[in-house]
Each structure stands twice: as structure tokens, then as C-alpha cells.
Image (cartoon, rainbow, N blue to C red; front, side, top):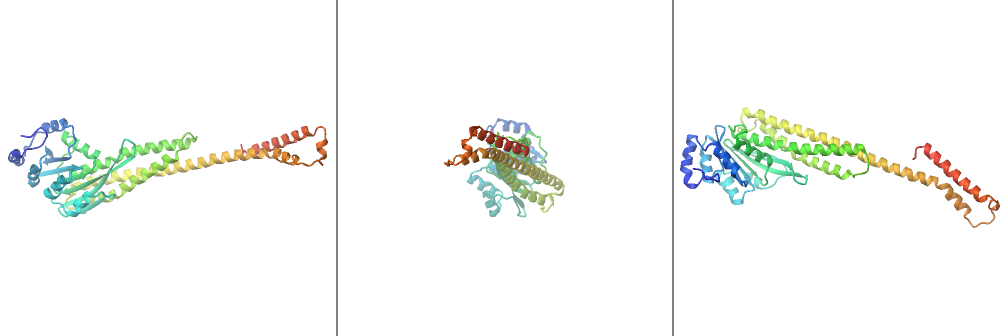
Length: 365
């Protein structure tokens, strides 16, 4: 019998082996109840499929060895931040992956990768998301794809992978009749994780675009625009190389990908292309918004300079007259005129008004 935690005990291995051979594993209802009652996320999740159906979930290592030896079963092991001991048991002892592949798996990489090791494919992909602070979060996903197994390794929880696991346990996902079909579902969910991020960036871009076109100085948009463009650039740099990885899978370069699965991988490639095109459109619109904002800011600055220049021009007549008659020279006959003061005021006002009218006709203010 299976334990409440969803794992098999050592004493049950013989019975479990017989159940594997007969193809009658634990019922789906028991699997669902075991999954729903678990409050903590498992560090290592394991799924065993027979004829496309999920027949067991979260086996112990000894049971996984038995399932690995059974050629009629498809095995998926998902490792989330495992300990070094668990990593060694699964990657080295259970599957005996190449040391270079294991080294690449344990080393963070900014670029996607696909490597053919004859019996299996090793891939590096990246999932994206937004954290609570609305900043971009990129998570590395390592995949080992064999003929009858799939091993995924990542240091952080990936929403797309978790969603696929929930659907598999609830029975709402497509039947996993091959490891390549299971890998397609994982990659498809990872690509789908780009869509919410693209939608969020599109919404932010439209908000910035509206404010840039509306004008006003209630908010400095330059920092928002630069941050948005930086996020777009990082996202595109992450996404574009992954298209080559999916392209190699869709071309059937590996014997581990069946011909019937090629259209499915091409569909994933098309989805990546559509996301990249949307990001390109967002980037172009953000560039236009940035140009509009900078031009509007420059225009408003020029308008302010024009007003200050006009005020300076209007004040030139009193400054000139005041400087002229402010000299300590007594030999100025007009100063002895009885109405010299009023005449000087009148001339000053006339010159100021005339200058203002002329500047107004030139639309300086």
C-alpha cells in the first residue's frame, strides 16, 4: 500500500514492482487526494505514466529505479532546488548523465543551449515572470530528454511547470504518451509564461504612451520609459536564442523526437515568434513615446526660454533710459524742463508697450 505522504516504503517495493508489470497502479482518485492534502511543495516531484495515463506520483528512489528499468513506462522527475546529495543520486546514480551535462546543469547560464548526447538531449531554457515589485524575474530550466524519461532541474519554482503538474494530477492535461510529448508540454507552458509579462509590459507602455501624448508635467516619464525599455531589451535577449533551440527540435534533428511531434514543436516556435514580434512592436512604440516625450519637454523648455526672453526685451527701455539719465552729468538741458519726469515716464512706457506688442505679434508669448 502507498503511504499517506504519497511515497512508497521499502517493504512495498516488491508489491509495487508487480503492480508496475501488471499496469494497475494506484487509482487517479488516490493521487488527487494525496496531492491536495499536501501543503508543502515537494523538492523532488516524480511522475510515472503508462500508456499516457499518470499511474504513480512521488516515488522513493528505489521505486524510481524499478520504474526506470521498465521499458513500458514514461518517467518525469522534476527537481526544485535539490540538495547536492539528491542531485547526485538522481543525475549521476539513477540516470548516469554525462559529467559535462551535469556541470552545465549546476552552473547558471544566461544563454539557452541544446546538446545531443545520443541517448538523451540536454537543454537549457528560461522562464520569465514578474515578482511582487513588478520587476522582471528570469528562471533557468534545465531539461534532460530521453526516449522514456524527462528530468527537469531548476533552482526556483516555475509557474508553468507547477501548472502542468497540477493538470497532470487532476487529469486535465494531454496524455503523456512519450517523453517528447511531455517535454513539449513543459516547453509550451514555459512559453506561455511570457504572455502575462508581455501583457503587463504592453499595459505599462500604453500608459506611458498616453501620458507622453497628453503632455503636462505632473510626472517625469523619462525614468519609467528607460526602465520599460531595459525590461524589453532583457526579455528579448532571453527569448530570441530560445527560438533556435525549439527550431532544432521542430526540424527533427534528434532521433528522440518522433515525427508526429514535429508540428507541436513548430507550434511552440511560432508562439515564441509571435511573442518576439509583440515585444518588437512594444519596443517601437516605446521609442516613439520616448521621442514624443523628449521633444515635448524640449518644446516646453523653449517656450519658457521665449517667455523669459520676451520679459527681458520688454524691460530693456527702462534699463537703457535709467542708465542714461542716471549718470552724474549736470549738462543735460532736458533735465531742466518742468515736465521732464513725466515725459521720461511716458517715453519709457511707450517703448515697453511697443516692444510688448511687437513680441506678441511674433507669438513669443
